[in-house]
Image (cartoon, rainbow, N blue to C red; front, side):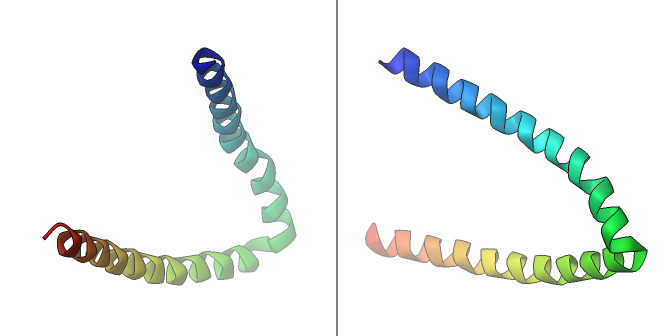
Length: 74
């Protein structure tokens, strides 16, 4: 049963990795045509702001996780 599970997981992972590679190749030209240059600029600016908030949030979560683990292991 484990062999089947490992091979099934491998196939699913392979399909997922191929999907990750092919999806941007398909969607990028379409979004560029639909949004235009100004729309892509607005999108990029918005994503950069969101990335800063995500970075700050993930740093806070990492510190909180370390505190909780050290408190439990005392």
